[in-house]
Length: 560
RNA sequence: GCGGUCGUAGCUCAAUUGGAUAGAGCAACAGGCUACGAACUUGUAGGCUGGGGGUUCGAGUCCCUCCGACCGCGCCA
Image (tube, rainbow, N blue to C red):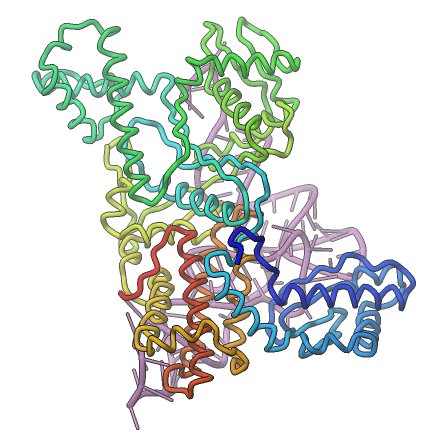
């Protein structure tokens, strides 16, 4: 078997395609008008079948008949003209204008066989030859990562994984905000801590970063260099302390990200964009496009032409570029190198979305940039709000949170909600092993499958992958098979709508359908043919559940 | 004030981007293990989708308008 071959269609896709063609034929035969493209949707209510189509509504206007009449007409014709459909569909009904389809058990059985056959290739889309840049997590290099970066990283990394599975060439980036005044503030803060190791009276700057995490950095310098910086002028020690702190903190951020299961393709320094002339190039580009003007000695970007409420400064009166100028350059670079650019920003960048999208349009790439906001997280512990005052230096760092609840719980909770929804994260709940905790529910499902497989005869497990699946006809078996078949579409939806929370929901649904199957159907105690078929279903469920969790960066334990 | 996000069951949230009787989980109530993990499961109850108007075969979803919450609105980054 060629492992690079494009994955086959699901058997149910073939069945639906056959229906699509037959229905289009029936519609045009009945009304002498071309049938519109037929779309299928999964009905919300199970009694409406596995799939439904609303062609009749689309035809109603031109055919001048009621949707229900059209749907009935099409169904009648299908049963006469395309009897072969009965092999794939156990029912085709016209209800309220919809045409509801129920797939026959052999289709679901074939879907299980395909999932087992394809393993990790199941749900994989052929290469799109499209490069996507994904930026997420980015923080100032002035302290440890906190909870909101955890959410952003969980979302971004999950999206990246999903995009890769869907055949995109994903490039993940972290932007280091290491240009500008805050780095000076960092340098002064570390310097103050450094001086305080020799002189406890030495004053701490008002705009400094008071967190204790700077102490070891200052002590490192003190140990290595002694008191020599105490005599040096500021323009000598400041760049040194700022850079030293930046490097140390970025390294720590990187370690935290890695511990969180997130690796980036690029850690992009802002300072470097300035030094290598990229910022100048970006500004120059806007100037060439006639989108800038000078006023009061400063250079402005005509942001109002792109929906912003104000024109924005690129170069200050003193000639120094603004943050926006850096962002022009950075996005210009990304837009040139990628087919699509996605930024996942923190909640404080809310007002920045329009500006940055306008920028993409201005640079000649309208529609190539998506900006999403990962909303704020409120940390709770047993219902009580955890104080996160940055000014008081009381920050709950991401590392501390991971220490307390583990990577799995944190990553699962962080993608559970749509990212534009604010999230309450209860640290106590996240480690509780009870039914209020969705992480354990899902992981328990996986462990339960693993447990059954452990107790099965090894030769049965071996034989299961190639077993005849015809015995699988129980409603809970077919429901589980149908759920597992949704995996590719769920991943596609996650990508298309930038909605990783659908993965968390899907994991829950798979676990739930397995639990129901497990409750209603015995596996090991059955006679051989049924036993093997059910083992095959369990294997398929385990595979899909594990891969769903893997996309989210959550482990799938065999026991717990 | 301007702009953005949001408002859905008692609570936390979904809703395949305009589809059918708005769905899950938790909490509540009533059931289910002499059988592979009860960290499970079955059922019941719970709603004028913040209010009002509009668009159409059809609106939680789109438009207008109020109300309310959060967040942005610097020649900071």
